[in-house]
Every structure is written in structure tokens, then in C-alpha cells.
Length: 352
Image (cartoon, rainbow, N blue to C red; front, top):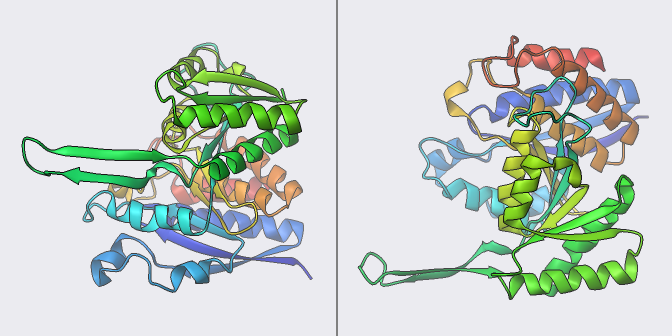
């Protein structure tokens, strides 16, 4: 009997369902070759449901999704829904309530994929960002005083707990050890200005590293320097660990240097519970139904999910098929690939 993995699927909005359909097709083909079975369970959470019912996530959703080891997410963002409603009500709710406290973002340039960085190739662009995913500014702590008046005050607080910081750092140290590349972990912060939050991060970083990970080289850089070096010398990095806000920013820069949103994928990880995998790009509603959107980011998210499930041989085969497909496309940009969305999915499946 094949190993069976029940997976929750949230296609989401815009082109989200299209790219997820290609990911499901590819992973079913992968399952056939490795004696696996993915048991897909579909949920209609997203903009259309919200517009029809006024409901983003029903009360039962979190407990229902908690029964799955993984969630496969397309994209969230609807042109008729005010920005922030779906992002907070769906994405952040899932990340927080399912304790997906790690956002994992591989920044890896594949052969044949163009990067805007001059004289840089796959040998130089291959690092990982570990972003804390449950705390910081994204908790929404703060408020307004005298809103709408000339004396208005807006406060947004970054909350960092020793517990939250330490579990993120330990995940990053463990990941660096398992990755076994340069065995260097870089803390990205702003200790010269954000002297409370990053004092905690830096102290915990060195205490944990010195005590439990002596073989891992510890490095620190301010976030502005990180952005500079990601462009000038990306080969400097092995694994970067940082807080929620800085992680959100530098991973989009990372997506650009690895070839763009057409290939960038990420995971929202709860190592002991339900994790969620998604393409980094948005819902791209202007391309909905046209067969122009690139599904490789969603397929790459599926590859991360397969690895998370412990099927490393299958994950390696799928990554190899993605690399071969990248080499056949004219571009990773929507509408410029030289193939339709479905044809790209078929190509990956054939390369398996």
C-alpha cells in the first residue's frame, strides 16, 4: 500500500486555483512514481466566499485544518475586497492559530534562469531565510488616538518574547546544521536603533549558539547591510535568521535575485503541527483564466511540502524536474513563458 498524505487545499483568489491545479497534477504524477498518495481536501476560503457570506474563516476551520499535516495554498487577494481584510483574516489567522512560527524561504537561482545581478549565477545565489512568523509588528498591537484629526497618533508595537525568539533561533541553527553547507548563520537585525527588540535577539542568538551549536559560525548584520550584500555578494550567505518584518522585506528582494515571483516559494512551518506551503507571488487577478500565469512557484511550494513530509527522494526528483523545465521557458514572467500554464505543468510532470 502506498504512503498516504491527507492535504488541505486552499486555491484562494485570482490565478491561485490555476497554479494549485498544476501543482496537484504534478504531485499526483510524482506520487505514481514513488508509491505515494496525496489525499486532497478542498476548501473555498478566499475573496469570493467572503463577498458572498461575509465570512473569511468559519469557527470550525482552524480545528478542521489542524487535522492535516500540510496545507497547500494558492494566493489570497481579491480586487473587490479591501487590502488587509483577507490577509489578516485568512493568512495571519492561519499562521498564528496553527502556530506556524517559521516562515522558510529558500533563495536559490536555478541554471538557465536570469537574475538581475551582474556576473552572479547558481553558485553564488543559494541561501535560505528563516523568518519568525508569529510575533513582531504583525501581531497588530497598538492603536490610534484622535484618529482623523490633526493631532492623530498611530502606534504599532513590535512584540518579541524570549520563547518566540528562541524557538525561531533554534530552528535556524538546526536548519543550518542539517543544510551542512557553509555552517554559517547570520542574524539580521538593527541593534543600533531597535535597541530593545534586537538586544533580546542578539543575546539569545549568541547564548544558544555558544552553548548548543558551537560548530555553527555566528554572524550579524544590520538589515540595511543585508540588503546591500544580497545584491553585491549573495554568496556571502548560508542561512539568515530574522524577525517578522525584516524577513518579509528581505525575502521579496531574495525572490527578485533568484529570478522573480514566477519561481519563488515559501513555507509557513510548525515543525510539530500543520504547516502551509504557497507561492510567494500574489493572486494576479488580471491574468485569471488566461493560461498565462507561471505555475512553477506553486509547484516549487509543493516540492517544499513533499520535503517537509519526509519524502526527500521524491522532493529531489521534483526539484530536478523544475530545474529542467526552467531551462525550456523563454521567461519566468506571466505571458512570456512561451507555454501556457497547463503546458508548463505538463512539462514538469513529463520530466519526472
